[in-house]
Length: 421
Image (cartoon, rainbow, N blue to C red; front, side, top):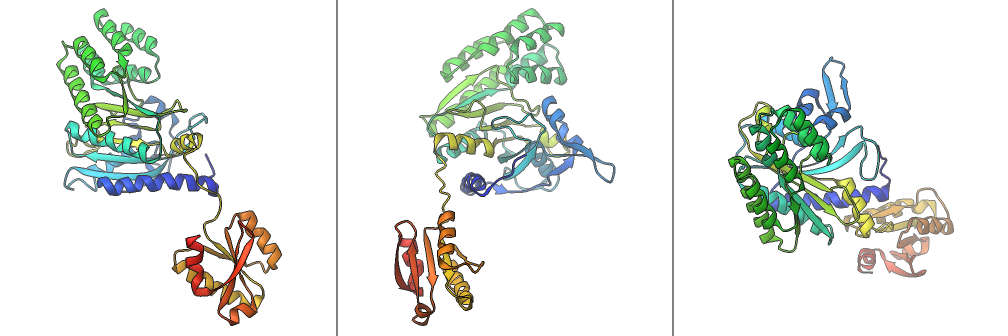
């Protein structure tokens, strides 16, 4: 679990600010749920790997609880209870921390931050397309040029596996192996489950059916699954969704993968991940989950959403040189030359803050030379020096630390002088 030092936290806050701007622009209302939830709620559709990685424990009341490992289950619980009668569709957003006992590695921490866009109560492909568009909009606003979306529809495989007689648990096991790209193991397990050879061969072919020629890959898939009506409909929906998103962003690259699966078990349709140059793990992931709210006792509520990984995004932005957040403090440092001028210094600082200019005051009683050395080490672009003679005239000394020059100004001129330069 990470400590965030000031420079690191500034980067995270920058990404969070862009997320919140998209909440505003797309109409997603921000919500927050407790970090701790009932274990059964979080574990129900989390996927085996996530269940094993959860921080689970008994509270003082003897209830089995856990730290949330992802955000969609708490959102579904919220909609099933507190927002049960709210007008649909609902657009909800969040920025939360999550916990999983993963092996620490690049972009994978035991405490990590994700944002979320959840669109609940809408079943049409247009809703799926909105979430795809949101994900692309976010990546573009953050400055990424080289990125692509990996897309699929989990219902293609689910329909085929269900037709072969596999229950949901066996389907989840096969999809879990596919998520890890352990395709040979998945095929072996299908044979062990006495799935017909022709079905095994079909699944094997689907695992290999992928590419960036969207229409061509989907048409190939449609021919392969022509005997499975539900799978054909899933591919038609995928084609529609990608088509809408491509109309908005014709320059964005989509990779269709018909063997694509994600680790969480609640997906019922579209699934997607966003990859950027230089990072082989997804920075955004999401999909459709039409049965989760109902599972928690709510009304039948089709839903789709996505979660940008904030920590991963900041790593990728650092690597691409997109986070040009200077370590300098955008403000001024105020140094009174005598202790009796400290009140005046505090007053000047307050007036500057009212003008939306950050200001800090020397509170250690250091002399001007030591205070200037400190201000220089902290990267302040300006220092305001308060001398007794200048104050009597309603003036101060403004020192530009970048060019080592200074001039005398009236107090009322300070805000404009420091902002305009």
